[in-house]
Image (cartoon, rainbow, N blue to C red; front, top):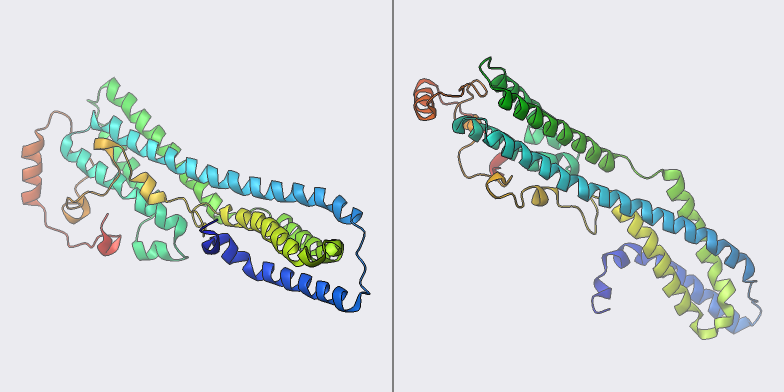
Length: 309
């Protein structure tokens, strides 16, 4: 109760609670001064309470399930991205693996911007998760298309492509959560039903005497708070009270396969190269040194701006 005055939910519903409390105060004052106001029968309000309770429970449950699904999708996405690195590390030369790792490490910020930024932000940052994954898939396909590749490498390629497909499916699912709301007709009906129910509350609680305005205020805070929590959790990635921190979750953990940004110079600022052009058995050090001397440095800015990876 110490931090109750700073409650975000209270701040969002304070105008509605204040209006209901003022209405209750006016009804109480009118009854006290004129003694001509009589309490309404409680039975209709009691019958409606059961239906209202079901509506609020369903609304809040649906919103929490969406929030939980969004959080679980982020953790599953992190798993698939880290598995791409774990499997590829065993079958791709080190120099080419560095490029792949940098591609995968672009995804946490790309996904976070995609799901949380305003319209048009994708053009500002110059990259989308699907573009990164498509580039990643094409480079892997080029590398594993070598006729001399082993059966084990082909199996690893299938595993990696499976994780890429799963990651794309999760991104699509997360986009749906961010773009599609709970059916508006249901939400509006619940809100209107709750409003009418609370406006009749002062007339039913007249028998409470001087405590009636306080009772209306507490009941309004409780029910409106439940409804507002449902609204706030409906979009898990843009929730005003507890958003799912996409980038922070994706970049956490993983050890050597962590998705956290690297301090090394990104590959697109060094040499675009030809995908994973170095075949197995090639001397990585001699290949990397010769390619760096033959190519022209490309002055391309980092697509995420000055923030880096």
